[in-house]
Image (cartoon, rainbow, N blue to C red; front, side, top):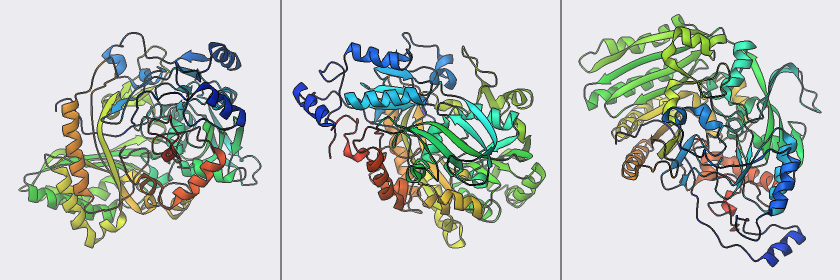
Amino acid sequence: MADFNQSKLSRRALLGSIAAVPTAAIARVRLSGAQSPTRARPGTSAWPTQSEWDLLSREVGGRLIAAGRPATQPSPELLSNPFYVGDQVGLTQSSGWLGAWRSSPSVYAVHAAGAADVAAVVRFASKHNLRLVVKGGGHSYMGGSNAPDSLLVWTRGMDSVELNDAFVPRDCRSPPAPAVSVGAGCLWGRVYRTVSVEGGRYVQGGGCTTVGVAGLVLGGGFGSFSKGFGLAAANLLEAEIVTAEGKIRTVNSCQDSDLFWALKGGGGSTFGIVTRLTLRTHDLPETFGVVRFTVQALNGDAFRTLLRGFLDFCRSALMNPHWGEQVHATSDRRLIIEMNYQGMDGAAAQKAWEPFVRRVQANSRDWKIVQSFFALDIPAPHYWDADWFSSHVPQAIKRNSAPGAQVGDYWWDGDGDQVGAYWSAYVSAWLPKSLLQPSGTQRLADAWFAASRHWRVTFHFNKGLAGASPETLAASRDTAMNPEVLDAFAMAIIAGSGDAAYPSWREPNLPDAKAASSRIRAADRALRAAAPGAGCYMSECDYFLSDWKRATWGRHWPRLESIKRRYDPHGLFVVHHGIGSDRWSSDGFVRVS
């Protein structure tokens, strides 16, 4: 399985053509104002005529384009560049998921320039009963940003970033707050460059620089420092959204407050198409930093003891707003610590880790240090500064050299293996803080050890909010996210992918993918012995979840379904395992209830 890496995440099934309903029947449902139970496909009488497509093109200023992939297969260098892939209307950042979906271009796309373009597309799709898809960053593991035989709203060009020192949501009387307003097509790296590198502020967003702002916020949204600043969704102050009737709405806690709440973690491309978001900004810490330390146990019992010792240390030292990112347990008995910190300097970070490091150093008979402990301070204004990294830690980043690259574009070197990934499996689970109590750490250590015998198991400490401040928890509680996140100290992720496998360019290695999937699922079963019934994060979870409503939203899903019925009664917006998706076939073309 040489071409499979043990890194990140998931997607959707795309089925074959479905027979069109008779033209007369379509005419009757259009006249009655209802929707046909089957969406239109190319080649059927229900598909818009060329003259109708021409009318849409004129309405959107000529920005209607064919949505196919590049005519010839790009070079491996370009296909490994996430900025290049994202700039192609017919490509997605992942190429598929075993047994679920393959990356498939829409028939047409509108390269939207603003909310008016989006509203025109929504009205057109509703009138002609089309499968509608939305793509910004294109990072959806579930395949939500692509579908065959569809019309795509491509928001990539809506990339404005505007700082505001005293923002007040429309028709609200709340005190002015520093904020940033961002177009729906913006990527987080570019937002950080404006807000932090140039503006000296901090906005809670994603860790990957090429993730789209809108999709991350609407899904809830974690970044490296979520324990310090909460969910990205909890920092949403206002949104501009086009709802199913083609109306442009400005929503906040004072206008359409139920819809505004649903957008805070209820899922992207579900309640409408968001065109602009305004997010609270925070004082920028003086320092961000990274901690690295790798230890290998010399036998299985020693590894289990090492994991137990780390969990005990976690309870005493890491359950606070300073810490985030990842700790891995690998199949070759390595504990790999790749964590970040904020609100402290390297000396304080080193002091915090000293008890654990000393314990490891004192037991060389059982544990071997593979990478010595170090803590590296990074001046916070330079944390997303490509020039600073090129000068100081050049191996940490890859700069964008594709045609049309913006100054300062880069991606983290560790994120490169996700570009074009064909996912074999991706599972996750929130781990409750009760497992860090003395009565739970041995059970969790045993489960973590047993799972790591099958596949690498990573605990993401920034994707659980236990240890955050009361204020951060209160803001994140007022979102649509599964409340389990508030009580979780971390989220476990077990995932694997193979090389890019875009249809007609390269086929996936199915035997290796199936073998990897089997091992990942065995690891998941072993870990869940310690956390049965644990929920998960909708953007990073198993495509094949059977209890996805409970796992993703907990007690919030009935309220979300009520809001969905109010704002999208005919189900124009459908994504895999999104609110209301169970009323449609898996490809989103046939209404089943």
